Length: 232
Image (cartoon, rainbow, N blue to C red):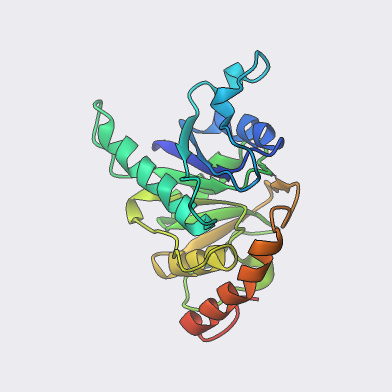
């Protein structure tokens, strides 16, 4: 069965955002942009629509982050997860007890069929989360342990089973939140990495400015305090 599909993309309006939306939009029912102003732009995309991107942005939902809010990608993911929960509840044709929520960086360009592959494996296994990028056979994590680096949940592109109610831990401002969430997903039923369907992550760490770089050691220490060891 195909369940309702959502995609959350935090962004400050980098030009690659349109590429990310164009790649994922045909694969989901709703795209949710968590619009933040950390890049210095003072206007969200819907205020400068052009003929070139009008069709692309049609039906895309925007949640604006308060201008005074400090950057916190875990909190931004949670804004989108709550929005998806509410949208499922508003459907009048049936009561859905399952829904799938992808989380992408705004520079993560998914290939055709990515959502089907990851969600399909996740639902077939009856587990909590999934990502792509593996080789050979699917790799399933179900233990309370840091997974090998090569098969950890890819923080720039993953899918959660929305009905399980997983949320990002907002103590992780920029780093380690994906590692923490992937580990908790494994403990909540499982996290699978499917082979192939490699996501083109255009600019890894491209958003890390001086302020975020200063926050990274704190994120790592908070992870160590929580899990008694580093994620990698």
